[in-house]
Amino acid sequence: MDAADPLAPLAADLQALPAARRRRLRSLAPAGQAAFAGEERPLLDLASNDYLGLSRDPALQRAASAAIEAVGVGAGASRLISGTRPIHAELEQALGDWLGRERVLLYPSGFQANIAAVQALADRHTWVLADRLIHHSLLVGIQASGAKLRRFQHNDLADLEALLVRARRDAPQRRLLVLSESLFSMEGSSPDVAAMAELCASHGAALLLDEAHSLGILGDGGRGLGYGIGEISLISGTFGKAFGSGGAFLAGNATVGDWLLQHSGPFRYSTALAPPLVAAAAAGLRAIQEREPERRALLERAERWRNALEAAGWPRPGGRGPILPLLVGDDQRALTLQAQLEQAGLLSVAIRPPTVPDGTARLRLVLRHDCPTGTLSRLIQALGTP
Ligand SMILES: Cc1ncc(COP(=O)(O)O)c(C=O)c1O
Image (cartoon, rainbow, N blue to C red; front, side, top):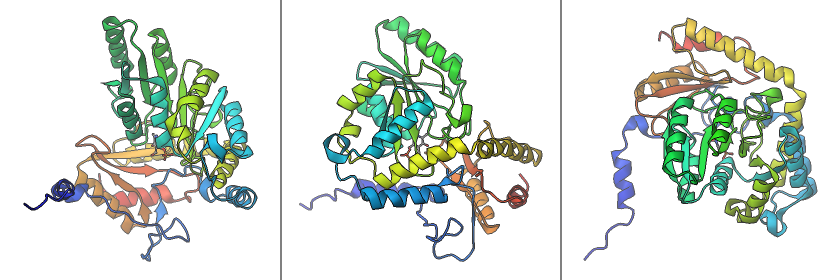
């Protein structure tokens, strides 16, 4: 008897994938962000999360190069073996001071940090109450923890409260964890973080807030929307977006920090964040602190873009940060708009299911601090009639 092909289920799955849902990898030209490799036409980047343009900032580039010279490229081991260098501890201290949190631990990526955070705050007896649009990494964390998942409507505190009340009524001692983000990356929207934290505290629920997209951009001095709210059990942040580097961190009080150090698998069993990324993240943090006017200007400009898109007949993008999703609904229409913009020299990416719910495909426009003047009118013209 012929043995079955063990990869047959994958092939069948790929065959069933509709063309408008198929993804492809394209490389940006190494010389700059302005063109795809192998293509002539320069493109203006309205897609990446490098909101403040720090990834190419000379201060960050110098910091990374100096760390390579002084410390080396890789850390060579996990933090608890021999991978910790003084720059790891210095960055953790600087972030803790900036955010007003007792303990910060670095992780190699935000995806990993989120898994670690959920595992710290939930076990198989826990109910996790999560915004229905949370990031995939948090869902993976819930699976890893074995907790039960209940979802509340996006940014809907009344719905969250109803779930909390029910969870407490059914099992008063049950461990509860609420998950949300302070700037949803595909929506551009934010919850009322202070009210959410109060609600969680009043029901004895822990709150994990993913601040991946808001750190450096939203809140007092760019410290995120969780800044100053002590009821939040853990903050998760990444250096891969506004910080212009790579890697991530979790910030919380001394107890949760020590628990992570003692027990977190994604912390203990992974090579420490590479020294050049640590040094660049530290330089990114200094840049964020020094460039408050740029941050404010970006937010004001985002508001002008929202007004102009609305005036041109497009649905007003939600929220108030630099992520401006144009909701178009149909997958193919979103891809057509992406191609239209590319023809006009603008790079923006169509976001389709399963990244977003069915029927809500969108063009994810991202405003960056260094977009040249005139970009908005180019964009509106390239989008054509709604
Ligand atoms: C909301 C959110 N959380 C976490 C992550 C993961 O961060 P990282 O890119 O550092 O793995 C991302 C990035 O895609 C994100 O958008």
